[in-house]
Amino acid sequence: MTILRHKVMISYESGIFSNMTNEREGDSDDFESPPSFFPYEPGEEPATESEDFGEPVEVQVEGVFLVDRNGSVQRFVLLTDGERKVSITIGSFEAGSITLPLEGAQPDRPNTHDLMKTLLERLDVNLHRVVIDDIWNGTYYAKLHLETDDGDVEIDSRPSDAIALALRWSAPIYVADGILERGE
Image 1 (cartoon, one colour):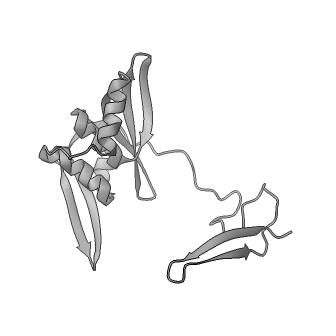
Image 2 (cartoon, rainbow, N blue to C red; image 1 turned 90 degrees about the horizontal axis):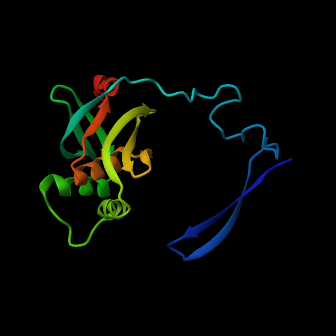
Image 3 (cartoon, helix red, strand yellow; image 1 turned 90 degrees about the vertical axis):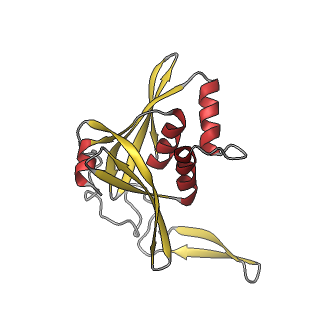
């Protein structure tokens, strides 16, 4: 049996909406096996266990930088423990949100990270620290370590959001030692 997948295509030039059906040969309604476009066969899935990158090391934000490569602008935040450095690619909004507290600037209106800080403070939650503790396929992963009246809570986060929040709280930022060793 063939699975039908539907997409709505919007053409901004003509303002026309068209309904398209995508049929993929070999796809079935058997949900036990992945669809034909899946990048690997059953049993070949990549390992989901995360690598142990060692103990977290406190780092400082050295700055937010822009690189223009053939017209494509990339932004990254540079973290250092004084000897080793790691750069993490971030979006333009996150770059601005990290830069504001570094420069001691206040926006005219609170941005998302300011709102998040206010919400957590009003709920009597404190950001104790952030830890960038994993990297997989070139993507970094972080955790927010929050202190609540009911105990400590750990929340997954994008590193850029974790850094932006840590700077607003003056909370320490940590990177796993093995990630710093890679220096990516």
